[in-house]
Image (cartoon, rainbow, N blue to C red; front, side, top):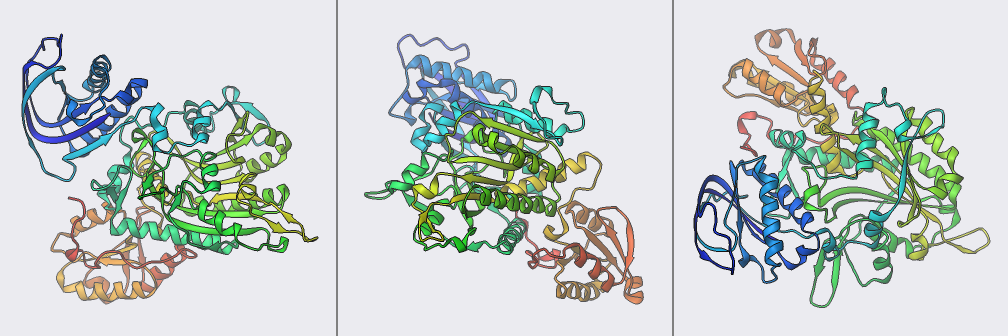
Length: 619
């Protein structure tokens, strides 16, 4: 299906004469709409295999665009000129009617006459999102977007879900009492349902815009975001922190290319064992794909290495700033699911199953520390090939004992992937959707496929096992989780905020008048010299308005300064977490904030220090 979406001030149309034999006379030959999203649609031959799939994706795409551009109505407009490979008339009519029905209950929608020549007049609004083109493929056509054999096999895979409790009992999900574990219930329901598309906009999208963290980039493909200075700061702090964690655990950081040759014999086999869709890139005589993880380059690097048993476990790590997965358009939602994302990716070579389990446990604990550092609640998902689980039941119980709460366990009847087990820490958001953050897998295939080997004590060549780990998971998705948590806190009557080490402004100084700007500058310089991000609201606004804006910006520490503070050297500080007013000397406040951010990376203020000099990124 080909779609052209035009956001217009108005659209007027009139049916003139039949374009096909037997065209039904339209009930309303004329139509008009204002502040309208006009969806010009060409249904294609390929859509005939699964028309319901394209309708579902199209409805989701239109609703998403309506929300973004704030249109007040929609016109479903048949427009065969967008394609040279049209479907049958009956399928086209059915798809257009179903699209209309899928929209009309949520937004005023007009269906332009099908099978008629029409005159039309519209005035495009001319903003960055006012003209969008989309290609929508039915489920059966996803191979053309790089769908792997593993992804196809995943759809047919049979699995069972259980809850592994703290006593080591494996309970069928429908027999487990979730009374004390409401989020585990939500996570279980989400996993078992298999539904990934969002039916409404998650709260973090509004927050990422209002806090000038990130936004959609209309000049790129869907699922590719722009990051504003404050969002870039948060991302870079997260990236540096996870990189430090990995380095402290023995990971060696490398860099590898973002594109690889489809024709490479080992890579082509691996693609069909990885459950993801790829972006394709064609040159004159070769076809490439954009990487969806940092696996490929690390495999090829390890293949060329000379590794001794003394070097094991051996860990290579890459902060993959650009990883790409061609996710289905209906599943793309803010920062939760993207087509381009940042993935910290570590691969560990282990001598045997016991060493692999030992490393798995170590990385599991590192991931627990990550979730604690971000102050995020999580639910544990552990997935096994059943045969591997049967041989490692005590290991599964140990994982549950470490986190101190029950976990969802999925047992697969077969192994279409390269791994035999993995875990994820999953965040449950405001829409009861679960998203995997930290994860580790045990891979039993790829060292042999890529001929990665080590030399044992006797000089023999052996293929190790390999762990795939992302201690944090996607950095973008961590930002989503932080914003969703802030929203959930607000819903529970708490003050929303980011962890202080991630707050773009950690201390804001509010001079009561211009007379005290220089004193505010002295204070901010003192804080900055102690690696605390401090800014100054020097605008000609009332103190009440300045305080309200600082609260709206989730600033952790707010200081009002005037004559009293300048003379006494004592500062009255508003503490966001508790809402208390506390008195500190500047040195005492430095100690207090420094203790809260100890062990975390620091970066400078991402915006001009003076609020009067700041431009707006989001209108």
